[in-house]
Each structure stands twice: as structure tokens, then as C-alpha cells.
Length: 327
Image (cartoon, rainbow, N blue to C red; front, top):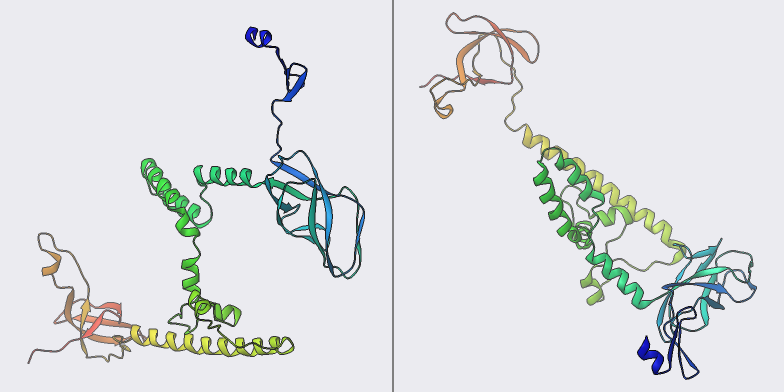
């Protein structure tokens, strides 16, 4: 401070200036990262129209910065039926704001209404970098997976699982897997999920590259009826394919099944696996018999007796197998 006084320098921290031989130099000026954008004057927006209005920055941005203008609300509305567009602009006191009136009547906007907010591109980039460098928050299906898995894991295993899920969380956010799933034909339905839900196929990168757009262009007045007819046909084919797949599954499941029509006097094997001490399970026989069917109690329950003089037993027919003597 003594050196500055001898050189004629004087610091005024209250006014944030440096005085040199009667001249004042501003040391620094605080720049607001987010600045409000307000309407400059009262404006009447005609019905079903779009216009550009003059707005003012309610703050002190740095001159020459590139700013990003964001609407006040997430859906872009500042009033009912009034949509505001995003914009990238240079820092000036007057900001052009694009507004669209979606109503069927004029709307009056008063002077000073907040249309949105301006942020410098550098501040937005810093926030994005900070979010990427910070610990990722686990949400959605990954959080449910971690919660359900933690019940059967030790604390150290849960910590390792959390770090692993956090490390590869971005993989689950990628939409390429969902796109592939929704554009692939499923074996059971015979259709893609996209065609079942939307009535048309997704436009894949190859379609855009080779200019092959799925479907035909339909006039607006015929679009609804054509889409309804197309979806009815798709859903009818899906129902038919699902029924066919169900029948095939039943045939495969019942391929070795029997109807259990055993008559009194028939001899059968009974499947009854038991462990014997000192003998490997691979060397043990799981079948007992032969048994003779004594009585058929109903369609699935029988009374059997082990030959030659075993005690009668009442069992279900499912573990039966016909007994055949060796020739």
C-alpha cells in the first residue's frame, strides 16, 4: 500500500475503482450468469399468428458474449396459448424474441412481463462439465436393480455394485438398444413393436441414407381412416400369430404327455426318486415296480399295488410309465 501511495495509486474498494492521477479505472464488474428478459412495451398479438417482439435484458451482461435465450417455462409458454422460441444471440440491450399465438383470439402482453432468461454459453458449458464430472445419480430401472440386489448382498458387495452401475449408467441411457428392439420383428407377434403401436415402421439410418421412407404419403383427409384400417389389419395378424405360437408351445409341452387311460390289471412303473446313503445318485434307479393298477378312482387318480403282494397306494397317474417285459 505504501508503494501504491508513493506512485499516486489509490484503491477505492467501496466504489470498486482504482484512481490514478485523477482518473478512475473500474477494477471488475460482476456478470450475472442468468439474466431476465422482459418485454419492452405493451403488445397485442393477433390470433393464430407469429411475430418478433423487442425485449430488454434486466441485468448487466458482458459485452460480446454469446447468450442462450430460454423461455420462462419448460413448455415454452409465457401465457395461455402463447409460445416463445429459443434463440442464440449476441449480447445486446435489446433482444428479439419470437412469439406465436396459438389461440383463436388476440392476446395482450403487458410491458415488463418476463419472457425468459438469457445465459452465457460459457456458463452453460461450465454447468454441463460440472454435471459430467460429478457423481452420477442412479435413477429408474438401475435404482430398482440396486435396491433389489442389496437385500441379498453384503455391504462391500453393494458398494462395488453401486460403483459398477454408476460407471456404466450411460449405456442404459443410450437409445440405440431401444430403437433396435422396436424396429425388430418379434417371433411371437410376427410384427415390430413400432408397427403395432404406431401403425408404421421406424425410419432407420439406412432409410435416410438411401432415401427409402417406409409407407406411402397419404392425403390429410384420408390419413385417419387409412391408419385405422392399417392398424386393424396389423392387430388381426398379431392375434393370429400369438394364437399360433400358443398352440405350438402347447404341442411341444405335451409331446411326451399321456392321457392316463390305464385299466385295472395294467402294469406300470412308478417314478419315485430316493437317495440311498453311500450310493451315487447317478447309479440309483428312480423307478419302482412293477405296480399293478387295482382301481381307477377318477381320470387322474389310481389305486396301485406293487407286485407280488405290496401294500396298495393311491397316486396320481403323472409319474406312471407303462411296464414292458424284456423279450
